[in-house]
Amino acid sequence: MQEKAYYRLNELQHHHGITADEIRFLVEQKRLRLSFLLQGISLIVGTRGKQGFIAQGSATVDAIASVDISESLALLSRGKVTTKTVYLRQASFQGYSSAYPFKTKAPNSEIIEWHATELSTIKQGVVVAKNFPREQQSSAAAMADTFKMFSGDATPPDYLKEKIKKNGDTDLYCEEFKFSLSDTCLFVDDLKRHGLLGSDNASKPHSSKLQPQDVSANKRPNRLTDKPNRLVEKNIPQFHYPASRSARLAERLIGYALDAKFDALWSLIRKVMNDDELLDLIDPEREVLDITPDTLFWNVPEDAPDKEKRVARVSFKNTVSKVKQKLS
Image (cartoon, rainbow, N blue to C red; front, side, top):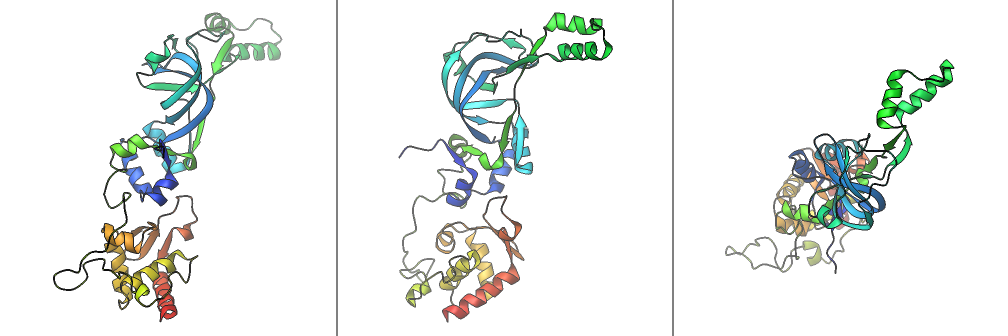
């Protein structure tokens, strides 16, 4: 199967156990930029200079585009962001041209310089891109027309005439990129570089399921025995409440520790969060994100309703009691 170039946030959370908090931490530490998929979009490409954008060519592009750290943070806090420039990664270019395609001369409001460059050279460095600009009447020319309309004077003020003479009566305008958190991608190479993929850490994907272990020297099960779940011993089918996330977790906990009191089961969840083997047994779908003394947090998208994000300890206790009654 072809290796993926990127993952969506939901894929990481639900299939790889990588939480939004882990991603946020890396962004806050300025180690990770959020990315987006661009397909068949017309762009001007180049580099960033001290005074602004230096364009080197134009093309129709398919790419994964990353945004700056500040914009990545804005996405995490606000859920959407706009930006004039992106960084292209794994880009393919169609119809590339290094010829200057505009009537409006550079420098202008979008391009400080056009430096025609071969595509092979561009690919060797960091590729910055803007949406392909449209040419429109310059602000000075528009002000001159407005002056004529309202004053009845065919001659605009000298400062407008000088500005038009210097910069021309047209200008370039690039539409902003508009990104939302739901469209966010994480570049596979970035995830690997930070150990979020291809690692055996607790919050990372596991390459295989656990195999039964031998009974320890004191004749008590270490973690998994040949019958790890007592629900299986009693031939009781699991998930009497398949639509309830809380009930599914309660059934697994009870199956693992049938005689345990609720306080012990609540503590077991905390232990599970730091034990890969127990995690594979009690919460293989990685539905639990975190647990505090009073609240259990579910691993759901950030835009999920609040009632789906957490369950209070007292509410979960009631669920455990109902499940125990059902299984007795």
